[in-house]
Image (tube, rainbow, N blue to C red; front, side):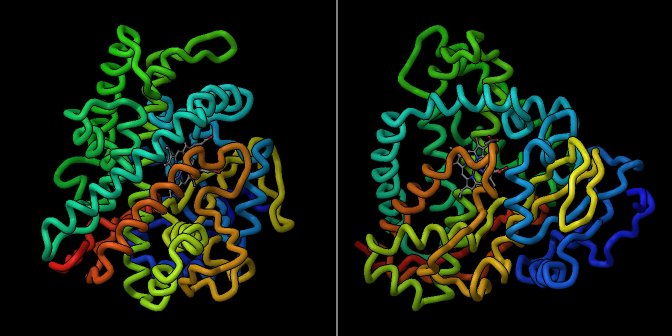
Length: 425
Ligand code: HEM
């Protein structure tokens, strides 16, 4: 077998900043070619300013639906732990992984234990209560939208509001800190985009955001130890793994993960979905015709279409095999979820936005396995409530051209101009 350092890199360059600054449709053409001609391909390391590593030989690109599912479910072979550098396409310093990625960058048995504690605080009662509040909050967001007819930015006015409100409400973040926390959570995934980095450096943006989130978490965990409340932070400070309580640092890392994982993903899905419905008016009409009957299927298609998380990485913990190719211990494999969600072998006419797609085995929440999204139920619930309000009360929303976020992690829409008609209900 060719040693990884000598293996030629694929001619399609999916590792450059320039590639990830192109619009999603253009990038998809490259992934369609890879799926068709070279479903397993070897690439040079992702360009990065975070932790450039001259000894990094590159990574395997996993671009088909079947392979993403297989790798996600084989955590014995393909690990996520900090000792392998975690789950981002590019290397991230270990202290950042520890401080920000929590259970995402853990393998069994530590992952099982921690995920069990964390799942245990998402009690059915807590989830049911937040669901009722989400419906109410979705109504308020659309009230506010209708109160100011004319041109506005959909991301700020709608998409960004519900996910951050939900997370803040569940964790118990005080009102006056919510905006600061939301901005820091956005910066955590936007450090590849010039809008966020400005004149600063990406590592500086990341560390500043991390500091803000940790400070907010420490303040809140201290407050809840002092005076418990009925929220997730109280449950976390009281929770135990094998009789041992979580430390403030562990809680803060989970706080960061929740703020980032629970915020940007649902927000991006809402923006992509409103755009897709505007560009496919017959789909929108079908959904409005029988909202209750069709929304569950539509939400699956929203997530497939948006694929808000573009990539997560795994690293071979032992020698493995994909498509007959030996994957040597230590080699990186990168899951390209958006590519799996456009795979012609898994979906009929994957390039068509179709809310009635059945079955719809979308892998936007992951390919299954131990790290499958912990918030998928909540995300579906938020999208259901938001579009219920939006489609029935603002049927004539005019949607303009999106401005996309650059980067290989989040399939983001930074701004989306919309025009709200003066006549809503
Ligand atoms: C449309 C919205 C969302 C999408 C597309 C999404 C996507 C994902 C993906 C792809 C993963 C990794 C799966 C894997 O490695 O197999 C993940 C993990 C995770 N998600 Fe989500 N997510 C969404 C919403 C949420 C929400 C609302 C929350 C929290 C309230 C959340 C919390 C988490 C957590 C805690 C993990 C880590 C699980 C683990 O490592 O065990 N997500 N999500």
